Figure 1 (tube, rainbow, N blue to C red):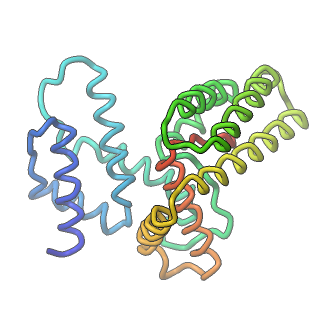
Figure 2 (tube, rainbow, N blue to C red):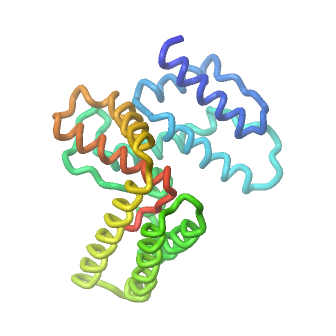
Length: 241
């Protein structure tokens, strides 16, 4: 079985689980469509999030009337892939940017661009508060999260009216909080888990690596790794564009 076929079968199994065991085969035009995602370099994790995003909207409409088909998820998958590429610093031709932007995940990247700063802070505070209730954190990381929530709560009031230089300073402070929490998240992972996430990041970047400079490839891989770290720990992005 070639890589594209394996990619399709993995998404077929994932969609089956989302459909509560109802198997919808990815064949014919749907197979060609999904193979196109693989050829474009859409990471499996991004494709799965696209499926999640579509299913979340579908289920929110009320009782499910029919199983979700993979074709219905394409717009979400490609939107999130665009966000992922911007985040890790690769473009459609495979060239890389030396300064990737870091985001929590593809869905949040799209949401962040549409949110106001106060709405972003409200969402981040809620997610950090929920993260404190998790079981895998060290005492040091739990304390860092608590400190970040206190800082963000103070910033939230200022963020409603901040303009110009005051807003720029606030964004710098948010980026600094984000960097500290990301560093703490890396420390929460076991060595073998870090190695596995690094390998996954390298695999995600590999379809674009041929036209990237070594520096751009390393920057993109590091950005992809940090996004996987966020997913593994459950850390939201505090920084705001």
